[in-house]
Structures are given as structure tokens and as C-alpha cells.
Image (cartoon, rainbow, N blue to C red; front, side, top):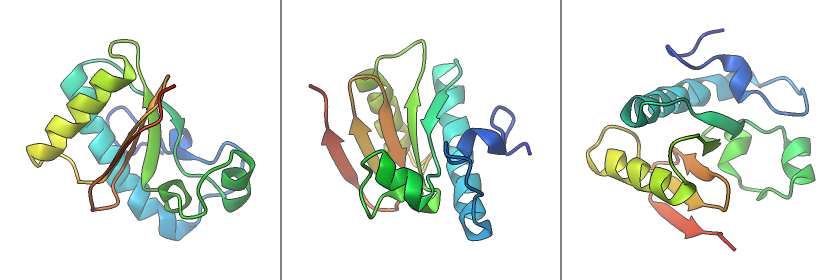
Length: 127
């Protein structure tokens, strides 16, 4: 199922194959729209490393028990153009201009976490 011009629902599914609950789909649609805006801004594709996670998969990967991934509001992103810190700057700018929802931005060595929780949260987990 196509969610936006460039994103399909399959990219947001839990990596363990668990079905996505129907109540999570509305969040995933909102997240996909934000990611489409980010993609348009940087001009290259975004790789979704992780989006919705089933509770079992989230536990297996060491995710927070309150992870935004559990409700379809988060994605871990990478791309071929920008390193994580620069991608995070683009996301920050798009939030500040009101183009995408406020939420969490976490910078990691190989990806950026972005979520649409509605409140500002920032962290840097690079090593």
C-alpha cells in the first residue's frame, strides 16, 4: 500500500513480521508524510531502518518500553547524501519552520531517530 509518493506501508512494518495493529496505521500515515517532506528537502531517498516495532521485536532490539516505535510514530533513518548529524539539522530546520511535526531527534553513529511525539526531545548517542 502506497502511503506517499515515495513510501510504501511495507517499509514501516515490524522487522519480525508481526502485523501492524489497525490503530497504529494513522500514526504511520502521519509519520510517512513527514518523512516525505524530509526526503523532498534533501533530494535523495531515505532508508527506513526501523519504524513500527511489535512489542516483542522492540524488546529483542533493546528498545525503550515507552518507545515511539511501538505506536508507529518513529523511524530510524539513513541516506546516502548526509551523515546523521547533518540529517538531524535538516529535520530540526523543517520542524522550526513548521513543515513537519515537533518530536524527538536522536543522533546515532549510522542513523537518525525521528519521531512525531508532539513535544521536543533531543539526544546524541554517537560514540
